[in-house]
Image (cartoon, rainbow, N blue to C red; front, side, top):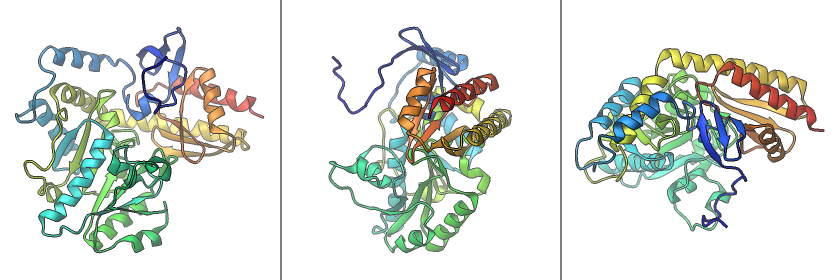
Length: 387
């Protein structure tokens, strides 16, 4: 028996080790991993530079309190700010912590300028911002909040309903928080024109724009951030997942204006920004943020989408739509996604579900074309056997 609580419905499979885009199970089988720990293993498994970084840093220093300066964190924060819109960074350990902290930053800003009643955050209904008490209520999902009481301070609008969005803004609204690409919600991309309108609306109403890039950020879209193509500058951006390449790191990026409210004692994290995590983050950043790397993500993405759309044409009664951007891909099905994902796994390809009957494809950002071809071959095979 397992002594783990049953809060996960785990598949009957375990892995012994990974290499690049592949995972090797304890019973000796080789799987093409197109989950990447849910967009976490941005450089695949056991990347030699990450292995070396962890080995080298582990011999020096793992953890030190944030009561002291941490040079590795200062270095990563500088890289993130120089690469993005941000002026300041607060390090966390996960995406949920990063979005939770983003909510605090937004509310604290208005408190600091004498507007303590501006606390409400406006979010998309059935989005996903994490699993803390605050973030499940921010997500607006009945399924996630059921049985956990009530945490107030959040209002919701339907994806794409601009009239509803505008009506929901009140004198107590502090910010609009949306995922630039909804991940769990079905791989739905917010168009560039919409992001621009959100920025204009926030400026007009004198509220903040929070763009949650926990899943779609750090090169996954083919740009460092998915919102960059729109030329929009948000006020706050939570990140996590890909920045650690598999090591737990989260962060809140913010501009100078909102950072002014975060004075000593307003927020803290025992492990956030620890030297070991920061060393890993610096190595990931050095690889993923380069123009050459990002261009390769775009190239791989273009190839993958092109081939998937051909499969959609070939199997119109099975594949309804191919969604997403970069290497954040959703295959919306007419048929049952659970059975489809099971058949993919039976053929040694790992994928994961999202809402709206979507099969989510999240390969390592350095996936090879021959590995994409293998994935396409397996998807084609599964489609051909579904009646």
